[in-house]
Length: 239
Ligand SMILES: C[S@@+](CC[C@H](N)C(=O)[O-])C[C@H]1O[C@@H](n2cnc3c(N)ncnc32)[C@H](O)[C@@H]1O
Image (cartoon, rainbow, N blue to C red; front, side, top):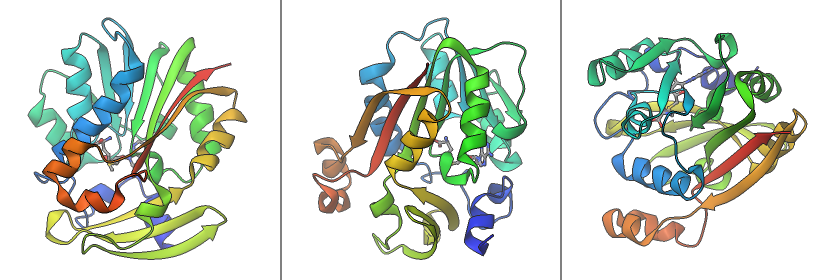
């Protein structure tokens, strides 16, 4: 396995001190707003729905969905991120476990993964696992970074690449003071959609997420991506 690929897929990456996701400003609030707005167009009423937030990080989405009346569990293999989530939202449920090892007595209405597949080396296994955790009418919501944006240096962050195979590149991104060094696996939307479909999931929504007017207003640097995708939203349902 390439060195970037093995670092990107180490479930303990966020505990090794190179990246600081729990630092204020790392999972920036404007991205959270952008993600929520994108999901909101499709998610509908979540009150009383059971939701699994895979790779819940510092817990913002678990909190947001909980505030809307959903019954949410967040799972994450990073102790650092989990401790922060517990400190910020002591009443909410977080478990220290990677998706590959997570088992639960009941199935979920919704499984959601925001910027987490970037750390999952075996997509086939992950989709199979998620499928087994969903109710027959359950939905999987995924947000991933845009392949072209994330494999290139940008905004003064240096990106080094290792090509893994066609349409899959492992990267080392130096975010400097903002949050240190992060390793990711970047794939094209095709890779996600094809793999999910081959694991009995149907693609219901696919939406490239582009910089909005308010984002460019707040963060001018995003003007250079105007009209281009910066993230992708996928909603899958079980066949
Ligand atoms: C880029 S952060 C995103 C966190 C959060 N979803 C957010 O929106 O702020 C990726 C998260 O995925 C977690 N992660 C890494 N490998 C994982 C795995 N195998 N299963 C579940 N989560 C994983 C990391 O520990 C980290 O908290």
